[in-house]
Amino acid sequence: MIKTLQIAAPGQGLHPFTSEVKALAKEADLDQGLCTLFIQHTSASLIIQENYDPSAQYDLERWINRLVPERDSLYTHTLEGDDDMPAHIKSVLTATSLSIPIIDGQLALGTWQGIYLWEHRRSANTRTVIAHLSV
Image (cartoon, rainbow, N blue to C red; front, side):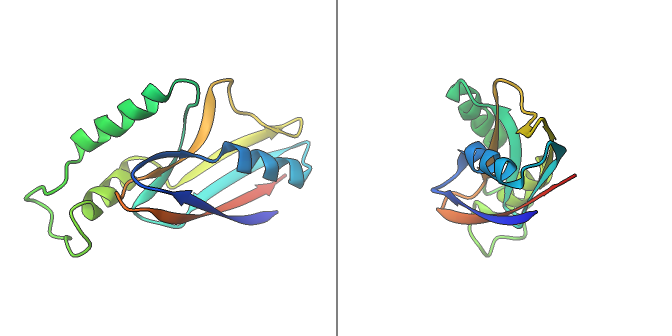
């Protein structure tokens, strides 16, 4: 089964969409299989991260912004704004795809794991994620 998800990202940060992927796993009706997620963008990424304490997400955002600052003098790709080139670098440092096993019809996520779209641009965007669920 292949589905396209449109994930709203109101701005920079981690945006959960675990419930949407769990619904797809239920719809696929697979006892065992694999869920592959792929984001069709170069300035956002996908991660699995703690879903219990929001301070972990906040700390990740602050850390990556310190690691990849805006307005670095080395950047030549600046046409789309100060946050664009850093967004591309952040995307390369994180992930554009995830693979999650399906076991007994459920995503095999740990107790405190959630699926997030990590928006690296400051502006609001709607991001496209392709989900492929198969045996």
